[in-house]
Length: 341
Ligand code: X2X
Image (cartoon, rainbow, N blue to C red; front, side, top):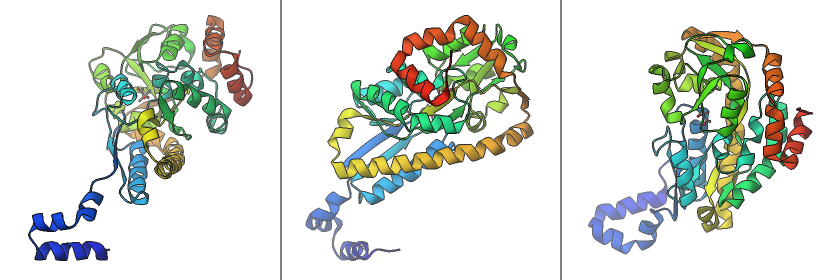
């Protein structure tokens, strides 16, 4: 619809030289520039539900704030890899970033607590913990390093293992496997405990590393395997479900505090609501993607989770990480999932 004030403006522009018209309409020309303009960077392809729902949220914020707050999205590592974006959101080079829990744990170690191997049995346990006390505990850690975390975590998913050389069916198959993992101490520790040879690479480097066989395997949820076209450079997909991973929406602390309360509310509401829809998108994709990926040539197999869990227990993985995370965080995790070690 053509709004009447815009029509009036166009009429006056048609009738008057542009410079004079703008000079005589200070309120309209200043309304054209948003009071706040935030840059939001992420590491995922534009087709991933995280980007689709973020675009909706940004449009809602612009509309509900009447153009006062604009959020510009830079997907797909356009602004650099995870490590770069993490330092940019801290120093204010960008205002928003969605690091995976694994990645922000390089700054706030307790954030990796949701990624303890084989902790969550299903999504019911996941969201009860992350929307509840465990998530609040992690977000308190963000505030201490000058970042504000929005309440709702977005879904990355249960991580599955793909490889170019062999299917993984039990813990033994991981022995010696050259596998890429994110820049994440917990992921390195876990795959070493399972006997693999893990290497940390930023997500921006994964496709090429697989294509050139610098590594033979990687692990990510199905929605990423699909949107980042990993089926082009991998043969097997083993349903290991070894880590549940999610994305935190973090905002530079100074930028967050610069927003008046009404804009803070508009922004939190829009992104928290969009996050819930994004979770549903991933749930639906989890149901349909196996068939799509099979059609692209990936060979799927189920795994024997007990063998992985037993190997982790024997290696002392749970004991070590319980000590690292501390009793409070570990206790909160166990409240949701039961005894772990
Ligand atoms: O880097 C990955 O594997 C990814 C995309 O899942 C994360 O952001 C941790």
